Image 1 (cartoon, rainbow over the protein chains, first blue to last red):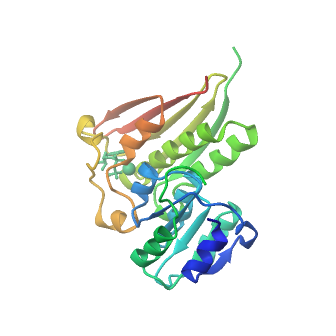
Image 2: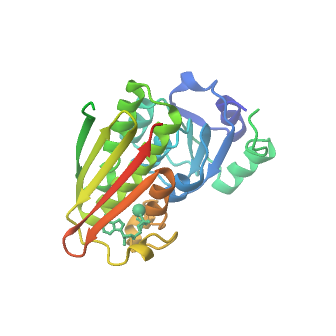
Length: 117
Length: 141
Ligand SMILES: Nc1ncnc2c1ncn2[C@@H]1O[C@H](COP(=O)(O)OP(=O)(O)O)[C@@H](O)[C@H]1O
Ligand SMILES: [Mg+2]
């Protein structure tokens, strides 16, 4: 799916890099532990998290992730958004909880197959 | 033999929020140089974990990244407490990180194992009470 499909499915608001909504997603990960993201996650994915600090963005940059979704209506501070914008990463915020947001994406096929679309 | 291209960074140990800035910078520089995304990812992840370690365990240090024709070397040096038992520190899940660090998303004990996994060679030179130097080599050919 594309990031804009994720946005619709999660009823999310875009905070930056709207121009990149057409990018493809091949996987996703729901996690508050950045250490685990660094250890296990694949590239070209989305990171869904309830953790809000600049390390979330830096972790996404290192892993070549293309999209960060803050769950439970968490809104990152402007410096966090700025860091993401500077690196071309789309930042979204959704009112859904982590479990629910992941479930919706999974049931719509995101990351179900390991192969690229 | 040509001289390596060297990037030097001072890692501020007081400030967890800014940790990782050097790794972001390296990633940008390596992209500009035109290395493959796979190499860039390995270098930046390994260095980021190392940078975080210096901030959360050793009150900061220095990072030097040397780009040779055939390899990249990353030297992370600190004057922190040193590592008493390297074998134990290398185990996945072993961590002495504080609850504060955990609440910020780190301290899962995956850093050193991750640095080893993403590099071709890792050496740890450490003395308790003196400091730690971690050297990572990533082969380009
Ligand atoms: N630069 C360092 N100086 C002192 N101790 C360190 C350093 N790097 C790692 N350690 C020790 O090794 C342990 C394991 O490191 P690591 O695998 O990165 O896990 P984590 O950082 O999540 O604790 C740390 O908890 C710490 O006790
Ligand atoms: Mg660590």
